[in-house]
Image (tube, rainbow, N blue to C red; front, side, top):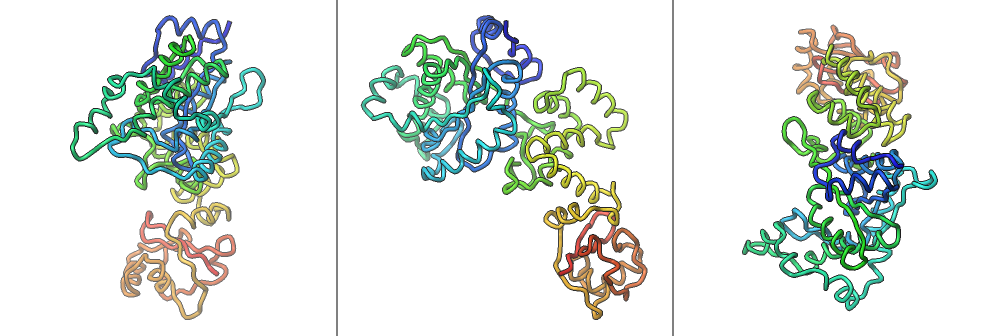
Amino acid sequence: MYTNALKVLRERGFIEWSSHGEELEKHFAENMVTGYVGFDPSADSLHVGNLVAIMGLAWLQRLGHRPIALAGGGTGRIGDPSGKSAERNLLAEDQILHNVGCIAAQLRHFLDFNCGENSALLLNNNDWLKKLNYIEFLRDIGKFFSVSFLVNREYVRARVLDPDKSITYTELSYILLQAFDFDHLYGGYGCTLQMGGNDQQVNIIAGMELARKKSGGQCYGMTFPLLLNAQGQKFGKSESGAVYLSPERTSVYKFYQFWINVDDRDLEKLYKLFTFRGLGEIKALLAEHEKAPHLRAAQKELAWEMTCRVHGEEAAARAKAASAVLFGETKIKDAPAEALETLSAEIACTETELSDDKTVADYLVQCGASESKGDAKKKIKAGGAYLNGEKLTDAFRRLTEEDLLAGRFVQLNIGKKDFRLLKIK
């Protein structure tokens, strides 16, 4: 008997829709199910919005079943038109291959590719799609799809009926290629389940039907919910845009801060979806959090756990230390050099030199904390300027090497929140 992962996935909020009802329940109870999710290689990094699908695969594996992460190296050369109002820019093949490699590295933080019978598989559909020739495509795939089925898709109708838009034959073919993926994985890997976002439901059904008609296979489908935050906005966005798993696109510090800033109302949902903690443990953690929500203890635990998983414990520790300094949990004079170095890349930081000709008022102007020396002097006199966390009282004070933190940094700020650094050359 196998673990019925369907029940667990439902309890944790992963399932928006699934096919075949009780039949799928029985399939999970009696078999080691192989299920797959496709990942679009249009960028060199996945983002937080992909985490529902990634964790869906991770839970599948954790419960004894076999996950397949399918990189769309072939379909990515066309681009999925689902939900799109215009044709995507087509990427060069070498760029797609580079993106696939980057995505593969990120998936390894969540899936075990060397654990025996239910080891995860990482496949690239370019390996089989590139072998198709046009005649075979029409004969072996196209004949199973009616034109009415294709043009009745909502996103297709919207673009066909709008005189300012159009949909190309290339885009229309995407659904056939994704369906062929499912049939190929069914025949070659015993894959009977495709999972994906809600916008993939029609594509998933097409794949199930192709496997049934072409290969006589019984396959199943499941979609994940569109994850919205408490404000009704698509989860995984920050003020600067999507939150990526790559530190080159979203710094480790900003990734950590994203989780620190999640709304209390989203915590239960996020813990269920993005951690492996038991439901009882989550309930207890959130009950404790509610005693002092202003401390954001649950957000801090979530930020630590997610940052460790995606970027490693060492990088997470630097982000955590930098956050503690910026938000006053650690005194600036006690901050480790790594935390200050991390902050220097995230907040206003000015490179300069120590000079006997400059006063703290000059440095306040140089780093942008004051508009002029006169303005800086007024702020110092009013008690609103700080040096390394201590109130400044003398506008003519010079900086010395004794003021340097970690041998090269100085903190200057006006008020408690306008936090600026000087990096001494």
